[in-house]
Image 1 (cartoon, rainbow, N blue to C red):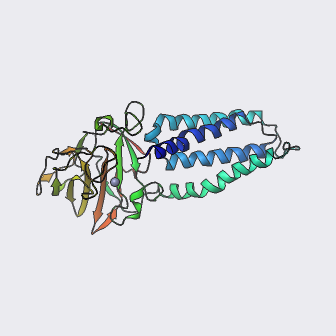
Image 2 (image 1 turned 90 degrees about the horizontal axis):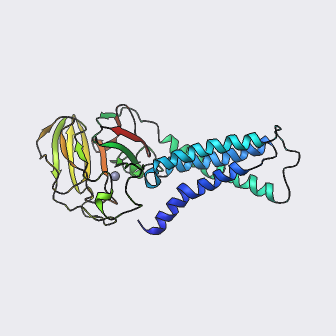
Image 3 (image 1 turned 30 degrees about the horizontal axis):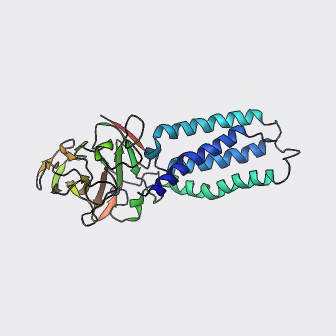
Length: 302
Ligand SMILES: [Zn+2]
C-alpha cells in the first residue's frame, strides 16, 4: 500500500473526525436547531468512518475514544446552547452559512453511504453455522458483510460472504506499525488454524512462499490453502504459511482439528485468513456462534 494511501487513511479515520469533534466541543450554538444540525453532521460522518473505515489500521481503542469524545462533545455543547430552538440572531456574516452548509453536506454525503453500509450488517437467510477457526486472542474482521462498502468480496458470486480476518495486538492494531514488511510484526502471522467444520479435505497445498508485503502472487490467488467438503458445503481457507498445512486430500477432519498456520502466500496484501463457503458454485453466508461478521466485528476466541 503506497504511503499516500496510508496518509489519507489516517486523515480520514483519525484527523478529520477528531477535528469535527473538537469543533463540536468548542461550538457556541445560538439555539438548539443549530446544535442539532452540527450534532447530526458530526454523528453521521463518525458513523461512516467507524462502519466503513478499518479500525485495525488505526487501533480499535482509538475508534472507542472517538465515540466517547463525540458523546462528551455533544453534552458539553448542548449545555452551552441557549434553551430556545430558533435562534434570534444566528450569527454574523457568512459564519452561519458555512456552519450550517458544512454540517448539512456531511449528512447528505455520508448519510446515504451509512444506510448502505448498515444494510450489509443484516445476516442473509439460511447461513451455514461454522466454528470460529482461530483461538489465540482478539480477532478483527477487515472485510466482511453483505455490501461492497464493507466487504470488497461482495461483488463476487462465489466469495460474496467471504471474510478477511486479522488478529489484534495489545494496542488494538493488526500490526506493529502501519504497514510493516516483517511478517512477524502482524499479530496473526503463524496463528494455528483449526477446522471450522467436520468434513473431508478436498484440496490442500503448502509449497508456496510467504511474501513480503506489499508483494503479491497473482498467479496463485489463494496461495497455500485448504478446501474442505463439509456436508455439501465447500469451505475455503486461504493464504496459509508455507509448509504449515498438516492435512492431505481425502483426510477426515473434525471441527477443531488443527489444519495449518496463517501465513502470507498467494494474492494477499498482508498476513490474514481468508475464509468463505460455497454451495453449488455460489457463495453462502456463514455465521459463528450465531453471529454474522461484518467489517470491524471483533471476536474473542481462546
Ligand atoms: Zn479475502
